[in-house]
Image 1 (cartoon, helix red, strand yellow):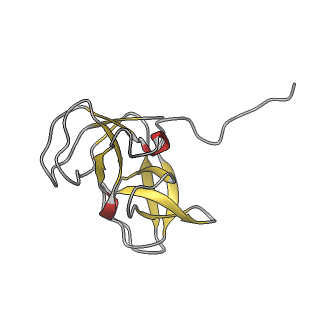
Image 2: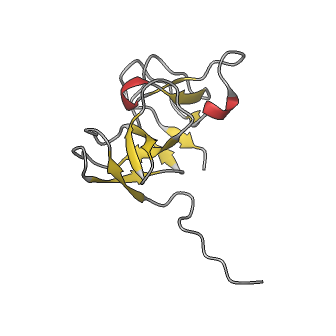
Length: 124
């Protein structure tokens, strides 16, 4: 068997190219080939992680994934609730019976109000 080395390991920070203006803390998703990312719109199953810093369109942006992340909440979120990507690079409560399970980014660790930062145990 030949040797194998993964490109990246879960929880490691990755570098992408910003396809739009990005603010640190926004949830990002793949928007084009060539490792181009933008803030999430509605629920997206193409998320790659959370922006580590602000980046202008066309600039490089570091993206953190896995572990515990702190994006903004879109709507109130209760601790223990699964979350999904939402508009403007935020996260919203995942709705059982309505949302596809593939949209779950992780589970909220704390209870927060709309627009507060929510601690998420991110799925790797």
